[in-house]
Structure formats: structure tokens, C-alpha cells
Length: 264
Length: 264
Image (tube, rainbow over all chains, first blue to last red; front, side, top):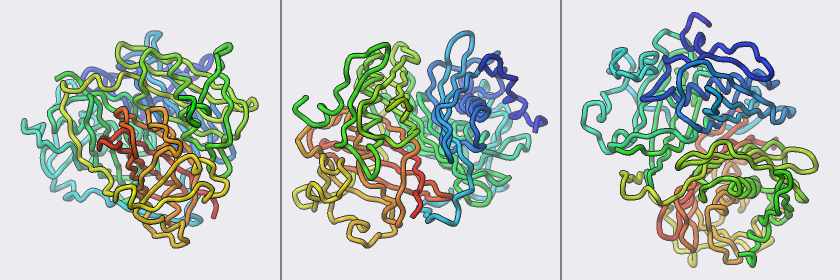
């Protein structure tokens, strides 16, 4: 899928002494640094190289320093390869400094269906069809290059973007790659972190300290319906939950991050 | 606080060549293995030794193997010590095998208040006072030693315990140490994993693959009000969210775990 930008920009080189080279481009950046979810996706793909199962099911990333574009190396390692679940870790280094550390469990998704009970206590976002929603043109958010690669559509523009924060830190919207790349598990690890933090609706901005992503199913092609919510902002920190539902109405990813509020 | 069982059982020995010895007792076990949250608390306390800030704010643990009681070592290391946040990692080893791996960010909680916006979009569990709730006697759950060290009270016994699973995987209840130990951040890392999995209400049992805990405030003494919910059970996996509110009505911990359903 190298015709797609995400695939070209996550191409990992051959490992040398356990270090996997990658060039971090400036096409997946948020305000002031490379998007954390993008770096988490890179680390997850490097961990995949050393584990015997294909699918990340849970990935946890800690953000040690702001990510910058340029040549980097990722050092993946095996923690344990069990019979049905394997665990690995990776750290991403830029200019001799560790930028992030990720740990992941891998398995084969889709194998357990039918033998176990199923339960769904939440519903997908209740959005108008994408064609009836409003979006943003590429370049609408100067300096936020990741927003140029992704398409977002919602029933209306968010309050913070209209200059009228709503006071309610939550949002529902559609998301997809602008170049038509179909979603997959690697992309989901980024996409859960690819929207503006909803604390903007209470007049705050934030940086991610830690992000955990559960990957629950391979996404169907098409638009992804997203819901993001912050329920607790206190002492300078906040959590942010993110759900992604695919075009078949399946919950494919759930994430939670701990964010640090930035000085106003 | 060595007069309390949790403190006696989390006493870490002096490090030797970076390995911190600890004896994992059989007093904090769930069905068939040592409680994962208890091991996560041990790892977090070992990480605290090597970092310059006192308070864990987010801890992520991956459970590589079932934990067993006996002599163990924990190997903590520093990932990065920044100006206001520090990151560390620890792995717990038993009989030459890695049982769990934890990563944590530490800071000083309570420093940011006043400068940043606050928002609370959820409310504490709506429970009758503990004195009007029902509880369980120690020993009521044979083989689940952790339930002997903790006191749980709820408006009624859970459906699964009455032999009538409700079909609704959620619960609200009070919790505290039976011996009167006041809660603190170290204990919260265990307590978020110290109740029966709510998937019991849909007739399933489960083991934890990964657990992320956000520690949001130092808990006040007294009973802790807990809420635990599973919203998505599919493909043999489920998430479980857990909130702990202290006696002053403050949300002190939020956790999410990915669980693997066990064969019926």
C-alpha cells in the first residue's frame, strides 16, 4: 500500500543490531511536535516484526519527549511469546534521545468468536451521513500537518474552532484518510490520537503523557465514526477516551490517554 | 504503616545489582494466581525508588504469566527524569521468569490546582451509606484470599454471587481495607483490580492482559466508592473500566483493563 502516504511514511528499514531505522516525516504533526499516535503506530509496527502473532490487541505508549521529524531508530524486543498472546516493547530514539516507549500485546484477532459471550453496552455515534456533514479544507489548521492527511466531518464545526468553546469536552465526528487509504489496526493506533483534544472546549490545551489503545477488531473499509470524551479535568491533568466504530457498526478501537494541561 | 497487612506484604528489600527482592505472599490472590493489581502496586513501588518525584500519575502493566506466591525480584529502571514528570519501568521475576512488566509516569500531584480549568462530567456512585449495605464475611470466597483482606459493601449482593447473573456487566460498591489501613496511591493501583470481574454478570470469567491506572489525587481516609463497567465484550476479549472516588467525593483513580475471557 505504498501508494498511500501513511504507508510510505511508516516504512521501516532493515534492522541493524536490533535497531530499526525510520524517517519521521513532518506530515503527521500536531502543534509543535510529531503526533503521539503516529509514533505509537511506528513502535507497534516495529514490535510486530519480532512477535509471532499478527495483531496488536493492546498498546501502551509513554511520551518521554516531544517528537521531532528526522531520522530515528526504533528498538523492539520480545518480552514473552506465549501460546496465544505475545508481548513486546519498543523505544523510539531521535538524535540519541529516547522519545517514546511502547509496550504491546499481540494475538490473532477474530479467533475467539462464537465460543464466548458477546455484549455491547454502548452505541455508535449518532451522526448525520458524511455527505450531510461539514468538514475542513486541507491547510485549515496551519502547522497541524496531520489534519491535512485526514478528513474529518461532523454535524457542525466544533465550538473551539468557531471561537466559542462549548464548555462540554466531548465530540462525535467521522474520520478517514484523505488519500483513500483503508483503515487497519496500525492506522487505528494513530487515529485514536489524531483529533484535536476536546479540552479545547473548556479553553484548555494539552499534551499526552500516556496513551493506551485497545484494538478490538479489523476495521471494515470506509468512514470511521469517532466519539471522544473527557470526564475529569483536575489538578492540571485530564483523561480522554476515544472510540472508533467502523462502517459496519463495529467498535474497532477504544483508547484512553492521560493528558497534561498546558499553560494558557 | 507496617502494622497493616498491605504494608507488610509490599515491603521491598534493599536492591542488589538493580534487583529489588520481595516476597510475594499468598494473601492477595484471585482464582489461581496472585492478583494483578497487587503485582502492579509492587512494581510501582519499586519504580518509585529510582525516580525523583513521589507520585505515580499513570501506570501501565502487562501480565505475561500468572503470578505465583514466593520469593521474587523486581528490576526497576529510569526511562527519563524530566523537569516535572519522570518515567520508569519495572519487571517482576519469579523463578527466573518475567511475570509482569510495568511502565509508569511520576510527578507531584496537587501542584497544578488553581492555574488550570477543572471539569467533572461524571458523578460518584449513588450508594446507600456503608452501614445500610450488605457485605461478605472473610472466607466467603474460598481461594480468593484478596477478598479476605478487603471489605466490600453494596446495596445488594451481586447477581453472579446469588447464582442469578443479571446480564448487566457493571457494579457499584464500597471498598476498604479490612484492617483499617487508609488508602493511598500505592493501594489504589491494586484496588482498581481487586473486585470480581463484572463479566461474571454475563456468565463469563476473565484474566487480565493489560491494566492502565490513572492516579488523579491522594485519597482521603475512609470508605472508597467504586464503579466498574464493561461495555464491550467481543471476540473473546473485553474492556473493564473502574473508578474509585474517595470519602470526600473526589475521583482518585480511573483504570481500564483489557481482559481475555476464559473458557467456560
